[in-house]
Length: 277
Image (cartoon, rainbow, N blue to C red; front, side):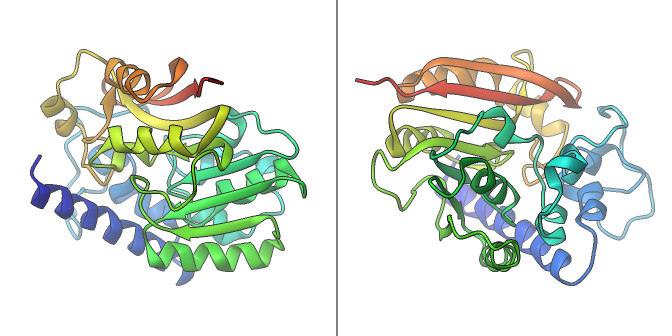
């Protein structure tokens, strides 16, 4: 992929998530936007992926009818007490705060933190002796996250502007890195994995949710099943993910499919650990 193509895709992602943040702050339910673009519904809902079209989208690669992305993946008890706009802004494919098994006093970093739902949940889990960072490249999402932080009264939280390929934290700064359906949006996933292991302290771990393809699907087949900004076309295969984690230096890596997002494409739990030496 050329540098121009990388830049264009990144700007498409930025624009899409700026739109999502603006929608939440102006009262539009992000669940409705998810149906159009940011979920698998962009290729198999009754709403066309082409904005403004009244024709049904091609359903040849349709996923199960249940919602595979968004706020619906957080149960009522988990979301209780969070600002409504933090919940509504969720565009993820899982609940990484549960995947990562966070503990009191840990330092956590959320890649692509959006409206802040996973950062706020992390802050709650690690308690006042712990800390939760979020990094995002979209000004509108960062503004929404800061608003949600204030509303939640979260004092052990900081949101940072930046890309997940170049994180503005020093090496060994955190104990856990989480992410919720964002790594697949990067145009340089190996750089993301390298940054993850850099910012982790020795013995630190990752607990991420992401869309992952079955090994049988070539990149062009993944692209047939959904858009890049819809978290489908840019997804790694399971073997590509495991190989990338190993190349970055992680050990004990696993990729566990949880639910189908499109034919041969799955929401998945990714775990791995940084060696202690």
